[in-house]
Length: 252
Image (cartoon, rainbow, N blue to C red; front, top):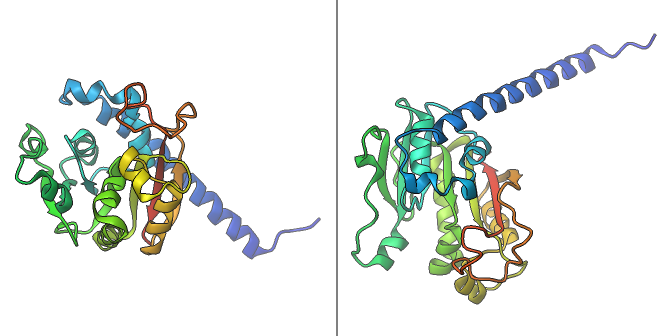
């Protein structure tokens, strides 16, 4: 009878334990995500978008856990900010960071009402980010959805390079950076980005990897093969139904 070497047996045991641990984490994330989505304090306007945005799958993919520090970069009206707030709980913190480039374009016009002012959202904090994300502690997760392309349009390659560097510096080692955006046809140029509000997934990967991240996973949850990626994302019929990529990067 052939026996496996002791080192081989130990290696298999370690692999088995790691897989079991990963499965346990995944199993634990699903109820947490579902509970955050079911939060009765979420506005009806947020709930109305759930079918298109698939928030439970997004939170599970982002590996959100209670007690974490999460940065919601370019948070808009706070759709994901509220979900993160519920998911991380009172021992966690959520920083809704508005990019300085957005404020410059608004020219003094007010942002949406702060989520931190809503009842039960004491763990939410607003900040403005430029060369840094302006977050006082290291984060477990930086999330940005449907807005990476805006930074690229407004500030060019230098702007997204600055953003990716700031995210890298803001994260703990092992922390995650999630980029979700409207998918473009391969090789879409600068003029096309500005016209369609889409971005080439390959370009995002290239830029984020250049900042020192490693690609950890990709999700197909928001793919739409019916979108040929030639229409502007706000057009009737395609709005809220664009083909979208979701990339999870990890800081080594």
